[in-house]
Length: 190
Image (cartoon, rainbow, N blue to C red):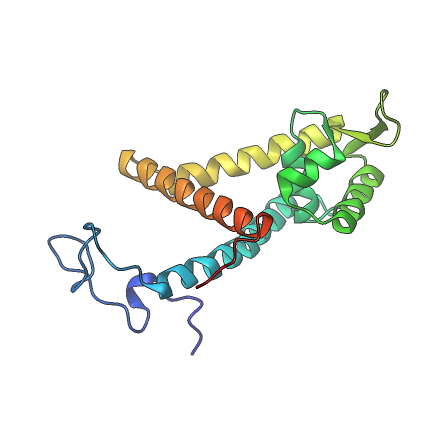
């Protein structure tokens, strides 16, 4: 049986929540000194990967509903990253964590399909500047409306706003930690 569709509270090995606290029975409920369950950390890393794939699927459906068939979800996310800005290719790659060959391929598709203009920088002809065309801005607007509807479905009250912000802060800390570990080679496990 696959565990891809299990909710956290129905997965094998998960402890039931107590009725009064909403905290798993037998856990310390976030008190100081609570032990980190490595399975939670590992599960979060796997969940991040799975959520990215699901988000690409959501974007794919959104493109289909807009009648857009000439680009895929990865290219649509590039359109979202560019937005109202004018970026260099390097800036786009850093914002989206793309690899060089993947970014070049996606940018070529977007230019050929008429979603972005790619022009040489006036000061440094070796670098290109990226900007959305009218067609790209129309796509960007549609994708922003899609994201707005998703956000409104996810966050319905003040508690959920706080939860979303806490999750975002945790993921940003994890992103910085992993980036620093790679960048500064601080992968010492002893």
